[in-house]
Length: 285
Image (cartoon, rainbow, N blue to C red; front, side):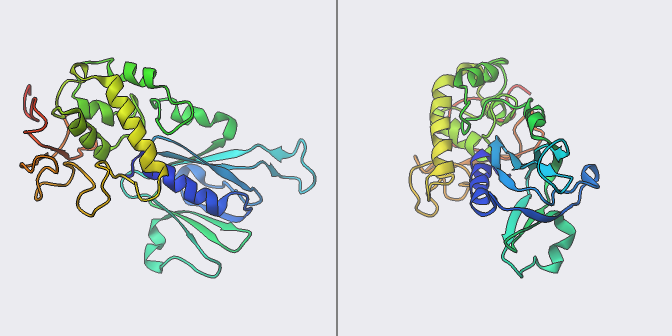
């Protein structure tokens, strides 16, 4: 599943290609968007909150004349990539392979001849830009946003101190943007089992480290989701995906559990019992 840093990078790539371009034809293939038309609007840019992507469009003049009372308000298209969503842009005269046709959820033809394709997008919604925040009101603070509030994120994480640390980090209502990779690696860097109650962890220190790492991953070339500081192939992570290789720090065995208790996405959890003392996945059940 794409994490907050991945979606942030996607937004910047889309901005570089789409911002300022005018939509000449749109095709929105979602039950809630039947009849919606973005033709005539310009792409203003993209914003993110956690794993959610916001594509903003200018107002549209429905009268064909100068802007005025007939101007339709600016719109925001909200999308969530979940496990398999994808955005891609094809050059003028190019199309997607026909085998992907059934996966297309949106098509935007631009005034420079390029075409934007949204594949397997989830939770699509189109709202006036002035109302876009209500779509994201349930989310916690995001380290990649200018309005990042570390104190509020800590308060939310500690609201139920008995919740396992990894499950708390994965709960986007508490803090937005940390996905499975980051939850695993931050538990390792904290030196505790993923099932350690969050109330037993120095949460402000963990958030400070996690926020810095997420920002670096989102903005520094070559640093995407490198949690160890090493870009050498196979050395990017401390424990995530290292069942065969072992812990990058101590060389001991890395264990993996099929799911984090309380996590509806049933994501895998990796940890090193030697470096991360504490309860296991079945303790307390």
